[in-house]
Image (cartoon, rainbow, N blue to C red):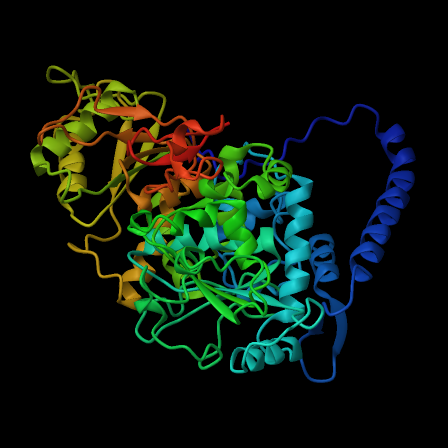
Length: 574
């Protein structure tokens, strides 16, 4: 194949059979086109206040236009942003820049190159964006712009934090906040951040990103909300040590419920802590976050601090009061992370530079298919390197993900070369902390070729040996690899890996999951095609709100089932 599947093909030009007829209709078509463009410009220019930006090269030759209008103007004039590689620039006109309305047009391209360009590198998403989700996101952006850091409303909310509790009316508490603070590795952080955003969306809270000193998350993500920042300013939350909060913290929701302090508490506390770490089930009241009475206790609280290492989106689908809203914004429940992640998680320009340089140098080279293989081993699922390599290849060959090698020496042509299968080529991206697996796959095809004659190229950007979540450069490289994995056409991932969840979730692909070893040996079958693209909620509440007793979360509602790769967890299915 001469060009990769994701690269643009040249436009087809048919022969003109009737030149006179074509010339006659051209003025009419031109008038219609100009009228449509004018309507679009008027619609975007006057779509709302607070969205005007400076256009022009600086100096005296400048004018003020809305960011939405700039999108249309650039599209009409054929302008391209600077700094992008030729692949993305060529693909851009053929793709939906705003992902079906998921993304806001009200950003300057150069401020975050990945926002409107990451989608150009991925397969076409088969998951339509609900108009209700689009409307909810635009509404949230309006709230964040009004209540975010730097606004007078935010200043008043911070002042109330340091004041004694009082009988504050709902009108006075005009803005409420959800403070997210990082915990565990980057994959966990991205999944919990996405979960926190959905909760903020459902409860009209403003999501604020807490950057503790040395958290390794600086220069990692772009600002996701137009006209404001999601970074909690230093000192705005006067209660330090948020990462040290735990189930014993007096201000936690679970402890408040244990003391009988629910929705009727008057005045409400200025802030509360929600404990959703993996050990939250030990306190019988923390899981009540996923019940209506837990939500009642939080409703009037101005500031909620959340600490979690879980993808708890499936738990939000258990809360009765959220059921109707969630069914509207996610008609396909199993695409929740796919949409939310593509909206929220945009790599910084530093990280995006790593992504595009690697993609252009290694992956964008005419392959018919891109295969992503993500390998991770865990202390609780020990397996040797030899066994895990065998499992990877058994899965890849058995499911026709990678071509088999010939059983005997291949027949060569007179020129001394093995004939290729119609020039087909597969580009294989391996992401792992260790380099042994990619080297062995590379050696296999280098030494033996393929039985089909296809060519296989194997790449691995890094092999960092161990996870170092507190280091900025380590996290930047890890995020770049997640993005590269999300560009795949087929994905193989390790069971229970949050890194893998992010990669295949952004891609919108059901992965082939390498099942956990049994007594340090490869299971049979070695892999399974996942039932959903959704990540797994590893430690669900297992609490029945109706009976106020333990219950099996995987059996409470039709669209939540136990995970194939982590039997105690649950995930959304459709």
